[in-house]
Image (cartoon, rainbow, N blue to C red):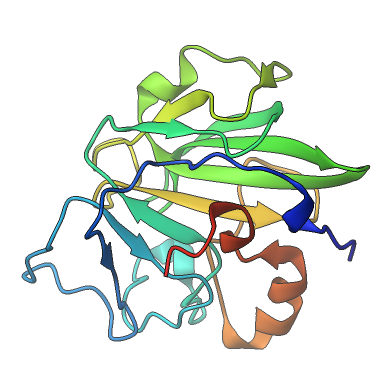
Length: 197
């Protein structure tokens, strides 16, 4: 796989997080009865999440998270971390899927990187077309609600791939047997987001 020296580039935040946001621990799954400290929070990359992915989409013990989740209020703006081109957009309708999804292609000294933004609002599809340029820091999407984001609490799933996607999708969680290969394809989003945790 190609390597990118991310330290050579300047990035925008994708969601401006306030002080005191929560870093979630989903290693024991998600407890809907637990009250959150803030509307903003971060879910970790490469985290084993027991009993969290229960819909038909996640057959075969796919429970290791391959992106970073950033929780924010419904309709909160989402920005592109770097300049690029809108590569794909689609509505992934299955229960537990991404709902409205964008993939942006970025170039770093001749190396391509694809960024998936998932769990978006329908409004996110109304202002950009595939092939259009995107600026660093440009608002490209908004946080979706449960009725449009695959049934999840409001958050952004950001996932980075060194492999060109064939469809507007990436496996947001993988099985332990596939982890080694997945970690060569999917980069820790903190490379562009900074030390969120």
